[in-house]
Length: 103
Image (tube, rainbow, N blue to C red):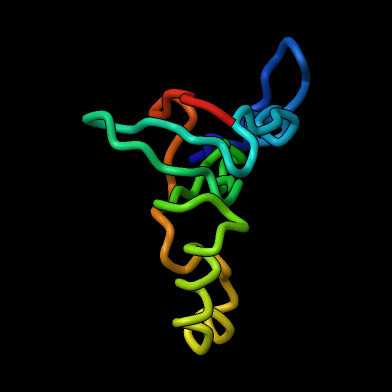
């Protein structure tokens, strides 16, 4: 059985993963985006899945805002020990599930 990201595109000669890794995130950090039912959140982290597909982590406050900093400060122990500054963000949103509002 062949793992899907390792399938080679005969036109480019690259695997699906290689092609995905060349794509850049469309929405910059700090962008306000809309998800299901009109909920608006800020992009706070760019990530990828194991196939290299673009993923976004979202949060109520923009990165570098005082409110965001307060959440991290209040939970400094967890944040430091989990090794993830976006511990409380909503993770794993694909680009097609987001609607750009503003930067």
